[in-house]
Image 1: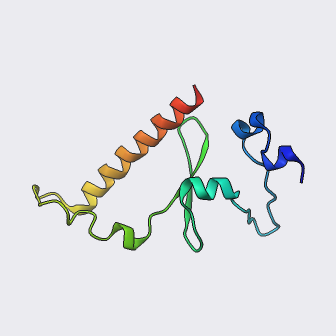
Image 2: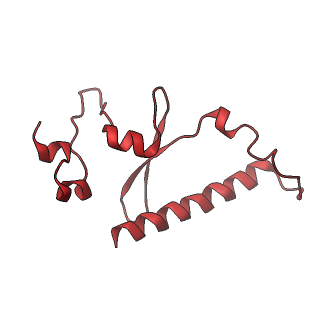
Length: 105
């Protein structure tokens, strides 16, 4: 594998890294990205597309990490938990999209 495929040149780091995709559609996430995102086997990632068409890879929190997520706070509403979680996810998504846009500028 060449240096440019491994992303060892400073210019290539902004472009990303080239990885092979197997006939089964599998690809290895480069180590530096796994470390940056805190991904360890057998964790999962989600691929999502931004409004601009960019594809983003994000680590999916484990159920254990989500346990007690709302238990730390006293209930102050009669709203359903699913509604609150949906709003929180949308808020987090907007924040990540905003961060991604700032990095590109």
